[in-house]
Image (cartoon, rainbow over all chains, first blue to last red; front, top):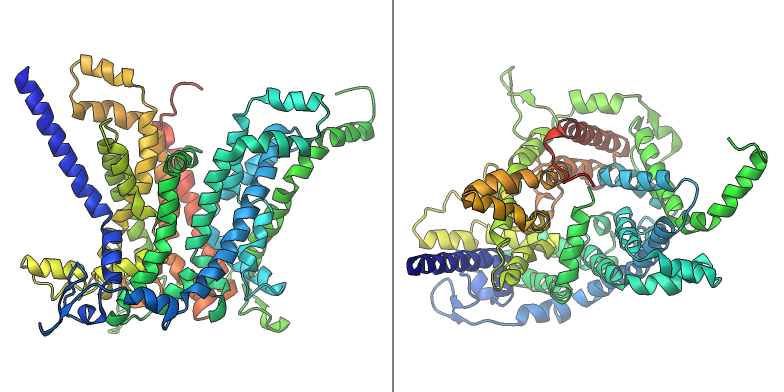
Length: 293
Length: 322
């Protein structure tokens, strides 16, 4: 018996060591990014740059200490990332209103109302999820350009008022279906029309899924790369993702690495905070998304 | 069927019953029509035309039938499997976007499936603090793509951190060019992709949770060890998730378009199909017609593969009759 318990603890310890090693490997990109952003220019000029943001310079003459210079550079130095942040936020905030609003209206129709053609429309919507986005990008670009939206953020915002994405509608509909019908029925008997019932009965109960949608929308548009890459060609309109890409990804110099990493830390920190705040809901949400098949 | 009332009355009845629902789904109907189906039809039409650039004069848009498709398969060196070797013969084209993209899919999908599955099995144990570990392993998935491009290109730079460490433990790093070398770039993309395993892991975890404990209990009583339980219970009962991951994996891999792969050029070893479409349509040329044809070829390939997998999906277990 005693030997058995001993063996069990040994397995447990090995298990935790394995997990800790794995976790360190997986958060390596974060550690790397933070360290780089704190490295001084002199340090990153070395032929082989160390992990931690301190050490001797190439000739072994100067000891380099960690510095916040890169963060100053990107906001108040040679880069103006506040402007880019604002550009990103404009798109993000618009969509954080448009997506949940539009998706929940359509989802309510699917979840709580009867109408001719419902099954067909729903199947049609789901089938579009399998469509590669590549097929739509070129004609959408031509369409938006022809109505004068070519060099603007409008293609990344206004279309979301029309449905807000098939996946989002699907998720909200699934959630609304789990709300007991009785509530809706009772309100109906009291004379509440469908819009009243949507706004006053169903929506207040949908807060959990709406939070999921809000966080997802924030992350999606905060990090969006391809959309802004195609549509935003004026430097003044660049979002964070495009500014980082244009400034640091195309042809970067070693000395620019700390600046790029500081911008990277700034950009990654918000999705990470949101994730920590709402992790339970988000992981559950990821699971629902995954189980749709 | 009903004898009372004509067609008019029946329509009226349907409208009366449906108007509210229609009103609620109207945004979706408009959205699908304007932003999905209209573009889809136009995309196919464009693919039949020689169409370069927005707002060009009408007569520069010339109908060429399946000319774009024929060009893709017979004249575009980026797509061909064999190219002239300069001595009058032909040689295998290592930089063909077909080859690069399929190679990427064939290598990453199994690696991703197996490793993320093992991670999930490992993290499915109910022990203290397991939630924190799951969180940490998932965390790299929410780094914005453009930022992870920056991180990996810097870490895997010839003068970057990975080489610094390898150098310290005595490895000769002079040939380790990572993203900068034609032959090393591709494996590097696959290695750095491993940090995204957390996404699939979460999906696996959800399917593992659906397997009732009683099944394991019974197996344990019958004397099945951990490995037997994994092979005989866990794997067979997660086949629907394997199936889902396989389909989305293929669709995703064939469309891979990451910031690493942009601007590296055709010889980089990372010239993927989606990058080729982007280059044709938006970057160097504005060959909308040709790029549309390329996107339909991709669509067809994905469609055929998906159908094939669905057809051969008898091995998928969807749980007890629901």
